[in-house]
Length: 141
Ligand SMILES: Nc1ncnc2c1ncn2[C@@H]1O[C@H](COP(=O)(O)OP(=O)(O)O)[C@@H](O)[C@H]1O
Ligand SMILES: [Mg+2]
Image (tube, rainbow, N blue to C red; front, side, top):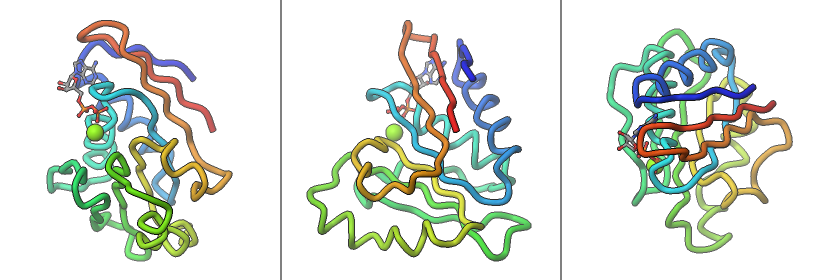
């Protein structure tokens, strides 16, 4: 599915729509250059799940987790491996356990950096910058 966004709000709305189809648990791999809107997408996604705290970019700590209202068995994990140093650090995140819980929702920015760890079944969201305000967002299961 291909979407065009011409504002931050539109990107959040698109993310919200996908969140609505993912309430039971999902892995979402976000790809695209700096400024494409990966964090913006993650914020819209979290808002749509009813998460009230603003999602902060986990750039330096690599991963943050949030409670999902109405989903006691799962959590939302927001991962940003931009500054990931090596495989050992990737392993230290405990991703296997996170991915193993089907009720977890995992949003991963720079997902290509965790290609080795990423389970086969995930939603791939590719974000392309067309102009300062325009983004092409391609979503594939
Ligand atoms: N259509 C759009 N969708 C998302 N972000 C947009 C859009 N147009 C402009 N922007 C701006 O682009 C930046 C995207 O930043 P961010 O979401 O942090 O990107 P990334 O996490 O991919 O580096 C924000 O400053 C946002 O306001
Ligand atoms: Mg980001």
